[in-house]
View 1: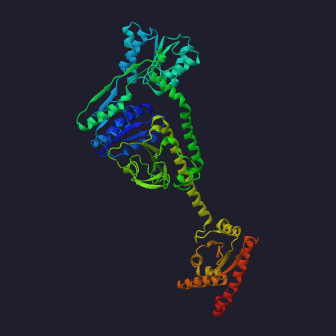
View 2: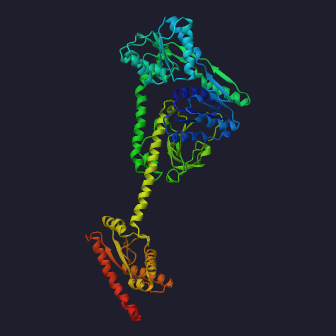
View 3: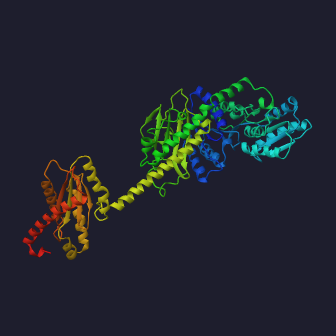
Length: 638
């Protein structure tokens, strides 16, 4: 046994996820089993590529590393989501269980929708004597909505009455809010009760009534379905139907263990729904419900503050990452003065593709399946301590993961991507709070934007540096050109003067360059220029900077050599260059005359003055060489 199970879900059904995962943890802790939750945030409103690449996360785990898997199939918005998971795990023969939705050849645990609504309807009619009832529908054609409506209609028919009106909504707060206002705007009287297909729409109805000056339950009774936290933390506390989700996780774990032991058996387990009367239908709330609401109100400021903390966290990241020039800047600049989010806990990491900050848009692989084996850990917090950037094998899923016998840990994985640019994923250990509050989706969305912005700036800086290098570099010699001399060499001299340090400016000129071009051709002339540049750099001190000042003129700047005189240094450079030229066995004589100027820190002379001084010294040397070469062979004279 691997002692670990996988859970696959879409993160927008956060309360359902919390109830299932919490139940799973209770059982897993007894057996010492680790839980790995893989969560995506696909919606119909997102770009198709964004959704498609998020599903890449489901290719991260190797099915053979898990004893079994649970799929929260009812949370998925697209068939692709469940198909990705099913195909891989079923093909590997790993036992799987589906939650709430029947999947071919797979066991299923689901809740029924009929009994709870039937109890609710009987309660309204017989206990509260309601006769005029409005039903607020969910999405048209939705099976669960149809079952809930049918339960209500059946009870009404048994009592010889029918629905006085219906609203067609979409399970959303705002559509129910608008429909209630439209109903009242039409001059219709309030019914005795309004039955909603879920809590979210019931809250919308309650807000619309409150805005019009009506009170629930004094003026109208109101009920919901699903027993959501917000419905239990409001005024009045919603009367609702529970599907028993609080037991789903424990049941799912037990049934998965059964499925592992009986892999060939396919079964369906059904949990009954039940009605919970409370304040919105005129009944007293339970002591537990009142306490939960009080705790929620008491903690409301901290809950809001935690959301603000995330906003502040990303605002603080924005400017440093917009100036990033390499991936290490995420930690060194972005996180330098930015505290970690408490909701992420003391153990989490950002795992990124090694090519994400290295390969440009045209070459970046448009991969929508799997992750690289060798991934970067861009940022890691381990037991509250920040760890240095490093690499790890993505097969580990969580860096350095090793199951410890008897321990049970919860690991959460969420994808990081922007359209087809797969950045990597975030992995969190034993801190599921973000997953239970929708904040994980918000975190991933913001982190996607930050990482992609960081990537854009890194590549923009590289492109600008390349253009700058081209702009300032002489194509023939590889030295700085005249512009580069102005930008780099002269700034070097200024910085040395500002530091109170001496420097040297050296000027070199090829002797009788015109003769080489006229007699031996411009190709040989280009070779002479290139050979002189290479020799000048090769035999000069390593810390010098060089530029091609003009056609056959070169300039070098560097620190003043304290260990030898300038005359000796220039002589040594000149002789070394001459020996190298002789070794080339050229058809023509190649020689360069060199002059220099010493730059003192206290001097106020301009760059032009130093160049003139070095040029003047160089021409003295040039005259000496010309006289010498002409004395050997008068035919060399120009």
